[in-house]
Each structure stands twice: as C-alpha cells, then as structure tokens.
Length: 119
Image (cartoon, rainbow, N blue to C red; front, top):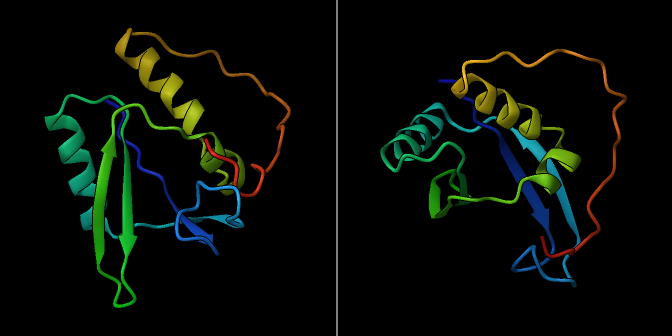
C-alpha cells in the first residue's frame, strides 16, 4: 500500500480560512515525523484510503488535531502548495487494482485558489 503524507500551513488573516473575508496563503511544510506516523496509523485503523487531518499549531510548536476528514478537499492545497495529491490518489487506486498507471507528461496547469474561497 502506498503511504504518502502532505502537510500545508495556511497563513490566514482570518479566524477561519474558509470564509470570504480571509486572505490566505498555502505553504508546503514538513510535518513532524511523529505526527505523520500517527496520521497514517489512524487512517489505517479507520480503514481510510484517503484522509485529511486538520491541525492547529501552538506558538510553542505543539500540534493539536481538530478533526479527521474521510473525504477531504485537497484542490486548494495541491494547487497553491504544490502537493501532488491527485496523482498520489490515482497511484493508490491503481495499486489497489493491481495495475500500473501509464506515465505521460502533462503540461502543468497552475492556479491559485481565490482568497477566502470556501472549498
């Protein structure tokens, strides 16, 4: 089974980055190894092929999990932070079906999610 984790920091001027009045910036980061391992462990235990974990990080660096989404939205994180989430999901599906995906070069289409857009 393919195991990949992707972490993004959302720099936002709003209390909740999902609301229209928030200005957001998505930044790819490396999560602490213990956090990544725990997320994989929880997703496996819950039998989730894909999961989105929402965290808050305190100023002292401690991470707190707010929720686990079994069907997470990943488009803004992929588009703005550059995570290859869609490709990873396809690779996982192909691996589960016992197949390999054909490799082809596809021109990158880059866009940034609208600031404050609710996904």
